[in-house]
Image: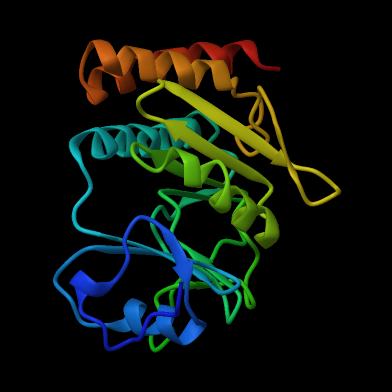
Length: 227
């Protein structure tokens, strides 16, 4: 496919698929004034664009998993956590993405300063400890192209939350630069990934707030059991 032009209208931009483009094309879309929500990803000459509001299932799971991060922080008050979900991560000219979940563990997390760009510049700050994608209709890409993108950025842990399959694929970055599936989180040390699967199943039986309440109870129990 040929590269897109920054002059293209929204209807002319390929959506929900990777297509050939330049970094300038990405920047033009990133900075264009628009009332519509737009989600972008860029990886070495390939661009992904999604426009429009998220669906009900995606929103419910996204809110649930963001709550999970806050519950974990409450259970571990001596550790600093910063949740920056949906913020753009950029390594200029090469890669960019806005994961649904972005977690920094430790005190050295990015903080915006006046006159600075709104996105996280990975040439100036470290990568997050954990990123995740809520996969409602994007599972194939999240387990393929997005996984390679985050591995290339050096993100230590990556989650793909399969909304329809009610399961979480969790990966840890290995020394060879590739992800290997895991059953326990590293960023949220000691958190079993199976507990996240159970939480998604609870969501299928009720609301995301009832599933969150159940998860909070499980985390309290887990915290008491940990040394």
